[in-house]
Length: 213
Image (cartoon, helix red, strand yellow):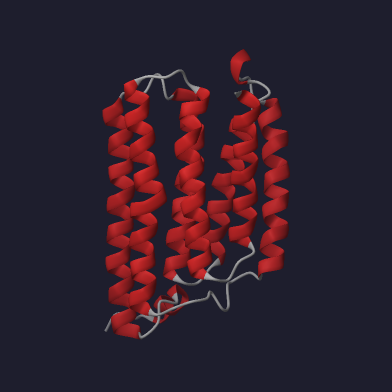
């Protein structure tokens, strides 16, 4: 089971690089949806069967793989933006930074005092690398929708960390975390629509030109 979970986590890491190297928003949304489905499957592989676990898996796949990507896709269609044309940092340098952060994540995870059953798994390095990928997307892209995708990847990294604690976390805490994420995406969708309506653009760098009258 551990090796299959590691293979899925390798897929998660590859999806991180796909998103870092892509300028197409629709493609990035589909990639992050696939990443969400993979993350939904992982608890069923790592932990023993229970109905509580089944409810969590279904909820995660629905939220991360269908509902949230659907909300972002709807926002993209409303603002009619297809690509992130001019990010703050180019795609090749961002990919190089992503590779460096991923390598550092493995080095850092190897030095952490993990429980014996968690040593040798890719959970911690994949979690750190995914967190850093989300941070990179969040800080190097100009479009608000790209930053929402970065926020979603960052949350996926936090979720991977949570896999180590699934048995200890009550279902209400997990449901609350998913609800917070849904509300966050919903609010950001409203903000994107307002920015698009007022400025005819969703380039967040233009917000720095705002001045108090």
